[in-house]
Amino acid sequence: NKVIYNLRGDNIKWDTAKKNWKVENAVERKIYPMREDVRIIPVINLNLNVKPQELTRDEYLKDKLITPDLKKFIKMEELRGAEGLNTLKVERYRRDATPFAVLILTVIGVVVAARKTRGGSGAPLAIGIVTAAFFVVMDKFSTVFSTKGNLPPMLAAWLPNILFGIVAILMYRKARQ
Image 1 (cartoon, rainbow, N blue to C red):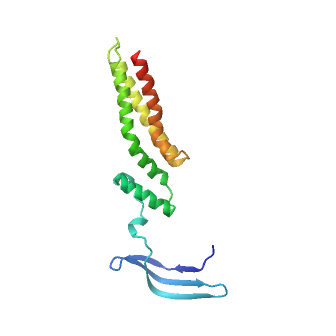
Image 2 (image 1 turned 180 degrees about the vertical axis):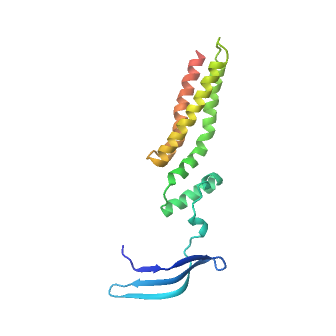
Image 3 (image 1 turned 45 degrees about the vertical axis):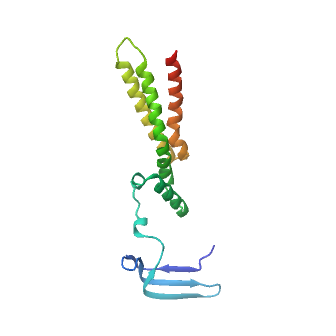
């Protein structure tokens, strides 16, 4: 928990030929208990184990990665202590939750469509559209509460499915009567 080495430079660049970082006008300090060594180095090459593409943040990277790569990326970002992990985790859990959401909304749609009404098909159509819109709004709210608040990512991805799953079961039981 103390500084024993410090390296500063005026400029740092990625050297594509050597595949390492090049620090210009570097000042290297080695700190010992009773003394300190300071060296000025015009150019020093460093292997920092970080590539330039890792320093830029791609907001759409989570959408481009397949699920196994997304899992690896999340683990790597956790080791780095990166911020904004909830966004990645919500995306990861949403990939599992989306097929269930399709099934739940299909059951709700079938139950609404199977109901015989005298007034025509306008009311069931409106109920279906409102239900789907409410699902999308709830999905977005849970995502925002996870990324900006403290809602756990897994719960954020599955909460709309849980609530609408209950609604689908209730509507199915009522339709059978």
